[in-house]
Length: 68
Image 1 (cartoon, rainbow, N blue to C red):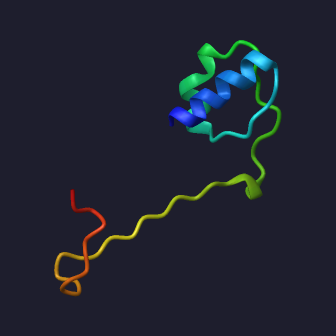
Image 2 (spheres, rainbow, N blue to C red; image 1 turned 120 degrees about the vertical axis):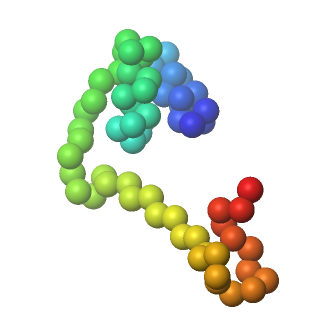
């Protein structure tokens, strides 16, 4: 998130543009006076996140992705 916020702040200072996800924009927009949404809503802009975990009774010797 630090990278995204730093990039947004730079784009704001330079009056540039940056493609960002809507959650980060919602969190930062009050601090970014020079930026505005130029385009949104196209299905090709959807950024899907996925996560896989190994069940507790999964293959022995395989580390769990959720182990801390």
